[in-house]
Every structure is written in C-alpha cells, then in structure tokens.
Length: 287
Ligand code: HEC
Image (cartoon, rainbow, N blue to C red):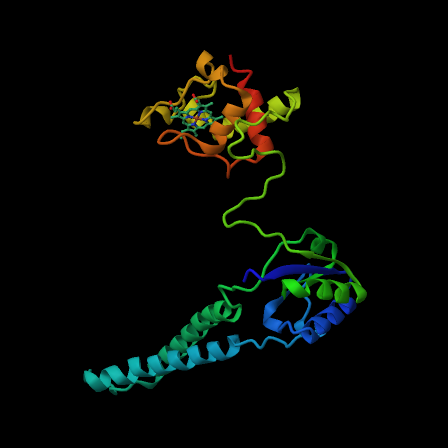
C-alpha cells in the first residue's frame, strides 16, 4: 500500500467528528478502514457508525448448550454404556442428573463467555491504530487511510468540517521504541554527552547504576558483582580501571545501549536515553 497514507484527523468534539466520519464515508472510506480513538468510550452509533453487534451472549449460550449435553451424556450416557445395578438403586439417577447437568451447563457457559470476549473484540486486530496524546485531553481522533493523490481533498474537506488538524500518522518502524532525548545516528561515531554532569544527574545515575549494573559490575564498579562468578565467557569490566575511564562518554553510552557480544546485554530497552547519560556521568565518578 505505498500509494496511500495513514492520516489522523483530530476533532474538538463529538459533533464535528461525526460529520467528519460521514464525509469520509462520502469520499469512499469504508467503516472498516477507519478507527475512532477517544479518551472516553463513545458508542459507535453516536458517531453515526454501524454499531458493532456483540456475539458474546450467543457464544456463551452455545457453550451452555454444549455443557448441558455433556452433563446429560455423563449421567445418562455412561450408565447406558456400562449399566451397573447397585443395591436396587435406579440406573439413571434423577437428583444426580440435576446437579451434574447444572454444573456442566454453567461450566460451558462461563468458559465460552470468556472465549467469546476475545472473539468479539476481534483479537488480534489489524485495524489502523495509533497513540495520540491529544486524545487524553478529551479530543476525538479518526484514523484512516487515504490515497496519496487525493490527500489534499481529504484534508480540505475535514478542515472545513472543523477538524483541528489532519496530519499523516507517524509511521514507526517495527520494534522501535520511543525516545525522549538525543540518541545517536548510526555510522556517525560515538555521540556527545548532552547531559551536564551535575549533582542531580550523578544522583540519578547512581540509583540507576545500582539497579541495572551492580549485579555484574559490583556496587563500586570493580567488576565483582554477585553475578560475576557465574559469567563464564568474560568477566565484567572493572569500571574504575584506566581502560574504561579512558573511553569517551559516547563510547560508554554505546556500550550500555548495545551491550557487548557474548558478555553484556544491551540495555537500550531498560533505560531511556537520558537515563543512560546519567549513568555515564555517574561512572565518571568511579575512580
Ligand atoms: C549481565 C552482566 C552485565 C550487566 C548487567 C552489565 N554489564 Fe557491563 N559488562 C559486562 C561484561 C561481562 C563486560 C566485559 C566485556 C569484555 O570484557 O569484553 C562488561 C563491560 C562493560 C564496560 C566496558 C566496555 C569496554 O569497552 O571495555 C562498561 C563501560 C560497562 N560494562 C558498563 C555497564 C553499565 C553502565 C551497566 C549498567 C547499565 C552494565 N555494564 C551492565 C557485563 C554486564
């Protein structure tokens, strides 16, 4: 789908959003191709969208019937297959029948109602999705796909109907994680440290070091953490050594970010960019 773009229209309120959806439908976007995002649950019908029928009750009912049949089979079918006469008791007991059938019916009902919720919520769903911070402030957003050559037409039409903004939704590469500070650009060498090495940064760094690094590198960074004896390939580096202290801030940042093959795990997903720089600043104090 290279000739179409995902657009995100943000509306102030329900009314303009409903008009926008109506317009989108006129322009040929089907209901399955749009996704409404709102901070509070808004019924589809309020926005003039087809209301999604819930199948949970029907699925649960099917489960109840199946459970009941199983119960009847257990209490009537099995004595039929293996008749046992015990002390003049009837082969098909009625009181037990009631209990077993009731239990199996309820079991079927509950099990299927649970599964039904997954089926009903369309899990997994491949509809367009996006996190939009404005939504938390009560706005309503509509996410939809539109052909590139008609983008202007869509934007104009929605703006006229009161859309606060209509922008291409951010495309994020798979597995990317959000960052909130300067990271680094691949192939441009080690980055420069953007975080001043003040008391606040070093304090945060000390705390984060304690959580993320001491297991291997030890509380003083000497490479003697409690996990160190178990590492077979390579022992954790002594961070107070001239060899490590000689490394540039950027080089240490990269080690934390990418780890070291067969030695140290990459910690980019555990630590934000700024947190990594805080740790770098703290490591400088280990001498
Ligand atoms: C699972 C254990 C482990 C954890 C956790 C760990 N490291 Fe390491 N680290 C190692 C090992 C092992 C080496 C030594 C690799 C080598 O000698 O090639 C190393 C090496 C290093 C080096 C030296 C790199 C170099 O080029 O000489 C630095 C700096 C470092 N770690 C920083 C950190 C920081 C900061 C943290 C926490 C954010 C951390 N490490 C967490 C195991 C770990």
